[in-house]
Length: 370
Image (cartoon, rainbow, N blue to C red; front, side, top):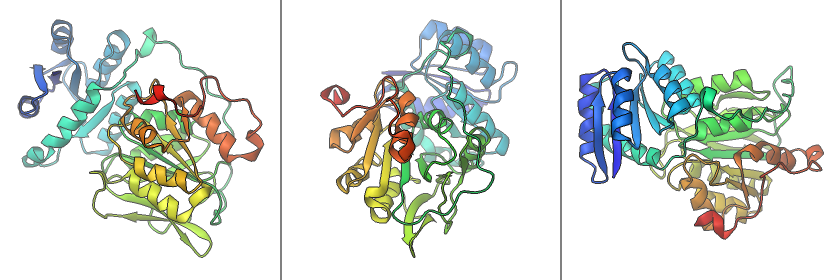
């Protein structure tokens, strides 16, 4: 049974989340508390498996609580955020501090009942997540290589047949993408990203990455010409596709129905790359729950594209990479810290003579799917 502790200053949200947990056969409620001070005591006494945590609370706010928790007793945390610009920025900061996922409070609380299944799935994914100690007590992260200066202007449009990189991710993907993209130079081929994320959050996500990357990072827009040195993030709640028109790559952004229950869907992005770029593609499957994109990654590999999957040890949730490996879709299994160097080797001819990163890429093995 998954033991869930609910921390929220809203009596309505506490009652709703308690009802969600109580309605699931594989979950039990470790408690509901209205503030962070009581939460520390309840964590010690009940040893929950997952916490839901409100961002805005009296006294110690959710970010301060999360920062302390991840330094002394790391646990999987799902943040509850508001659907505002400030709420999106705060939520992304929480993910940087170690939260594994989030969901927004609806503007109309009458819509809460429509979120039961989604919240339950997020709790199940969080219960499988690997979380590490953060803050002063954590092991310092390896320093990033020196950043390549951003090019002074937008990169040139990419001709059809040139290399395009597609990346799919879900739970844990926000931080995995940050770890990869901040270590890539400005002259990389275009990168298309399908990260499972709700409307209202992808714009803030792209903006935060754009501020710290040599690459330009933005939400993709329908009909946009694809350019070198740019990362295109699928807008929340919409699919992102690559299309080929008159010897140029363009983007399509659609509101077609969800695929594998997701919009944006990794499956949709990778299938479009099979049709538009084929063997010129590089497909990457990162951390996440479920199997979205695994079959399309296999199609990419079968058409001659290079395909990579994140390894289990560095994945927050190994579901999506594991499914890709099981299907034979992953040509290589790559640790997160080695993903950026490997992408540079594959995409930039001058980098191909570089030595592989420690703990880097390797062919899939039986250990990867046990």
